[in-house]
Each structure stands twice: as structure tokens, then as C-alpha cells.
Image (cartoon, rainbow over the protein chains, first blue to last red):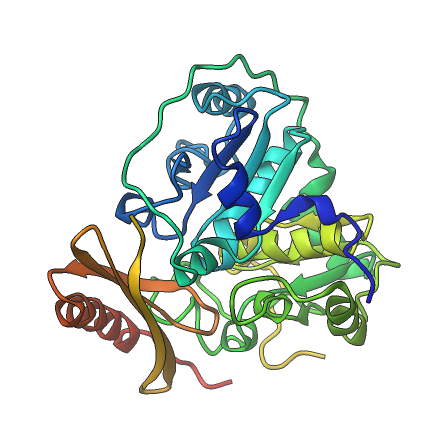
Length: 283
Length: 73
């Protein structure tokens, strides 16, 4: 059995149990359900709100560099701190935070394999106590936008097939049957997918307990769909968090070199006037 | 403190499958409901008993799921 290309980016729940109070380790929970942290979290873990702390709250964008530095500093995180991210929904927004921390050049960064789901299912310790850490003085790198795809390059990739586009939403979102995940507000005008995109839901990468499938399984799953690392890849979903998870899998677990996350995703493309849309199962 | 009596199950609501998780923590029951495909959180609620937390979360989830428009393709 082969190992992940970068096994150091994943830690187990047991590793977190043993290292959660290490001074050079900062555990951070990032959830889809922003109330989840308040219902109980890993002792010593901080909670980041993706809506108010990991987004530009004026224009639609990731958090600006200065605010990112402030968030890291206020969390007591220095450039050398090992940050362990975890969250609900199989680490959707934890992966999104991971992607942003990589954009700003944080080096020692890990996801807790299985996320909040596994920690809870294993009956591990929780607390409601919000920890306080001495402020650090964080200096981010210049943003590495090679990890991110904006709309125009995605449009070009669609036209000239210069990258594999992966739509990681559910089959019903991909075909255009529904405009948003069942039960969530509709956030686009049109349903379907970017012409030529392959529909490979994020969940194919995960086991029932929330952990990632083995390297061999992942290679086979994506390889069978023609995604094997020999072409640039752009992943997208609805708002960019599920695609962060697939980006993480392809970039770090499988080690594909050129993988970008299109965080504009379907809420951008499905609202663009004149943008080509394909409905149905696709080609 | 630890989460106690963690339980999860799947149910069908109309055409949507839902995944219900409930557990007790710090004298309170917590229930979350997701939509399985894609797995997005649809609702969550707390209550004094598991039944109360599940009832509240399921009511909200079903209300939201019922509002999902499906366009045949």
C-alpha cells in the first residue's frame, strides 16, 4: 500500500489528544455550522467563524492579508506554530481555512483526519471553555495565487481544455436538477455545470467515519475519472469550501502539482450573464 | 467532559436522504441534521432531551428540504 504524497499534513484524533496542549501547537475548529464550536469543542481549540473571520466582509473575497495577520496574531499563532485544523461536515471549512493559510504561506499546517465527526463519535473530551493565548506577531507571505483560480482562467480552461475542471457538488447539483444542496437557500440563477467539467463529488474521497480514503483508493477513484496529475486541475463547488477539500486531496494527499481551487464556484458561474452552462450528466 | 450517547442514523424525507446525529453534552442534548448528498448541514437544535432536540432539528430540516425546488433535466 502506498502512502500519501505528503503524509505530514494529516494527524489523527489520537495525535491531537496527545498534542492539543503543546505550546507550539494550535488547534483551530472551523465549521459550516458556526454554532457548533459553542456546543463543545476540543479542549484548547480556538474557533474561527468562516463567515466573519475568514472572508472579506465587504467584497466577496478571501480574508485580506492584513486581517489574516491580525487573526493569526490574535490566535497566538506565530510563523513557526503548528496549526491543526478540524471542523464539521468532514472538514469542509477546515480545508477551506487550510487553503487560505497555504495561500498566505503558513508552513506547518495539518488537518485532523475525520474532523469533528470522528472526535465526537469516539467520545473524546469536549469543553465549552474558550481559551486565550498570548498575542503573537504574525507576518504572512505575499499571497500565493497559484493555488486559486479566478473566473477568467476558468473560462479559458473551459474553452481550450487546458485544465481538468472538477465539479465536486452532488450529482443533482451537477445536472442542474437543484440550484443548491437540498434544504439550503438557492444562491444562483441557473443550474448545471461548466461545460466539460467532470462530476466527482467531494465525498468520494472520504470513508464513513470522516477520514480520508487510502492513497491507493484515491489514486484509483480519480484515475478512473481521468484525473491523474498529468494535467492542471481546477476544482469548484458552490462557494468553494467543498472544492477546498478535493483540492487538499489532490494537492497534498496525491501530490498533484498544479491544482487550483475556484472559490467563485457555482455562485459566480451560475450567476454570470452569458456564461455557457451544461445541464444533465455531462459528457 | 465528554459527548455521551452519541447516535447517528439515516432517514428518508421525500426524495432526500437525511443523516441525524444526536448526543448529550454538559446536560444538554444536541442534534444536527445533514442532507447526505452532498452532506451539508441543514439544521441543528438543542433540547433538554434527545427527543426534544431531534424534534426541533427535524422540523426545521423538513421545512427547509420541502422548499427545495427540483427542475427535471
